[in-house]
Length: 142
Length: 272
Image (cartoon, rainbow over all chains, first blue to last red; front, side, top):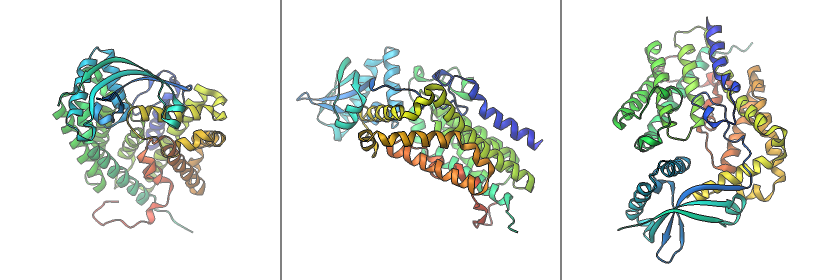
């Protein structure tokens, strides 16, 4: 009985080997194909995110907490979902209201939800950002 | 001849895993509340949470999480284990699954949920030596399978090109660039490694050796411990290069069954 229970449990954990790790919809919890570091990424990074803008027009990076989550990837997902479901304006206002009450970002006057395309190495090594196109802008009201 | 008290080793693994599950849910409660408050359109249930068509009210999510944390804490003591342990495993599976049902899978939670299920079956305080031996073997085998799956995913998606170091370089660059754009700092060694890509070839090979070589830990003894140390170093490397934390293996809990932890002294209140 012990052997059957043990072997069955281990076999169930191994079952994801039958799934395609390339198909992220096939990944699950706690039985996973572990695709997270396996996919080829390429040198470009393209994604949606939120940034702040000061009265002088300077770009300010927003922490995930200001977007609505402490987890960086969950914050990114929240932005993607808002864009996909047409709730970008609501999300922009929510971020603006958090920024309005946070003294550490009191120079930000505007929130931009953008789609950015960058050279990933340049972003990490020099902080150089590529092209950012607006989805939406909204003001920060204090 | 050295006799190994496997019942005590399994009991210590049970206590450590229970403690980890309790801490993981307790410290993650604030974040769970935050994600459970996301709009229903963000809800993407995974695993057992797929039975839900819509998110639960936040108060119910919190109530289940608190009950699961308390049940996990009860497994530490070992009282009424036959009833408490399966409930704790189910509660933790649900709570961690619910946390992963908002667009981001927390792969770091997989192993603790799986280990709790195995321990619910094998780690009864009244269990005999043979059951303890099997329990430890199953917990180690589950750990190994998860690492092998990660290695297989790399080989299936990238083939031997993974060994060139290019994919790891792009992965480190992508992951850190995403962090920078989303308001976090890059990992401490990210820039250094991107500046010296030759090191990445060695790290790519080492990663595959650790992952695909995980079954060697089933041999036990020094070989298993050596693999565990390599796997732990691999996770430290992931922190230093991508700032991605897998606390369960980093704290050593995932590898405890491979070490002679039975030499530790336990408080008498804890049932072995």
